Image (cartoon, rainbow, N blue to C red; front, top):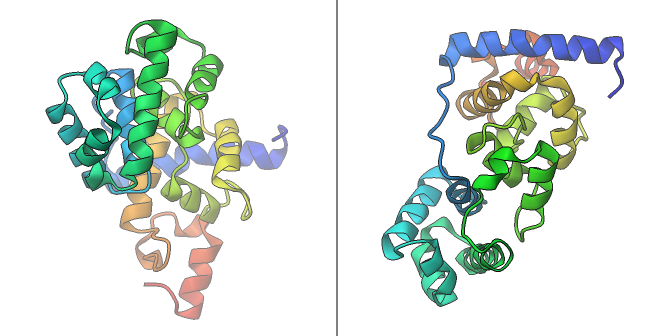
Length: 233
């Protein structure tokens, strides 16, 4: 995105959007900072499931195995059984073991703490080289575990950003990572990610958004149209 008047206007809108969302939902409290490998495995478990299910799967995995090395050397069926509540366990279990095996082979230890000192680009590239780690998973790990300024774009962030006109209507989630990275100030990435998720869950839902309760309605032409046509809650 070039530095056009339109792009400048979008960047200037981000702090105003966040101020409104903070008044509505309260300030963002940074989540617990887990070891980087724990965060990666937790994030893989969270793919295509709910937070409660992925959390339960992670807790069960840690309860059944004494450490990550035990997970690495276990029969894949036992790992899959431990995480079955998260869904797709027959895909997630071998992916987790492949990551652990590669770390063991290449680095001699089951740790990703070295990513704290890596450049953002190098850290992203390293994580993306693992099976099942896409842009959102890599961004989640680096934002939450390393506090690096990279924005994960999940379905809520993607949907709300589109409705607010921050990204194009045809922009994919992968493309949104690039576009939003150019707009959101590095020191507001965590706030932006969490506040848009809050708003997406509470008000700006996919099928029946509560447009009449939206604090950002004046920025949302879709919401204004829904209200005008009587199709909004």
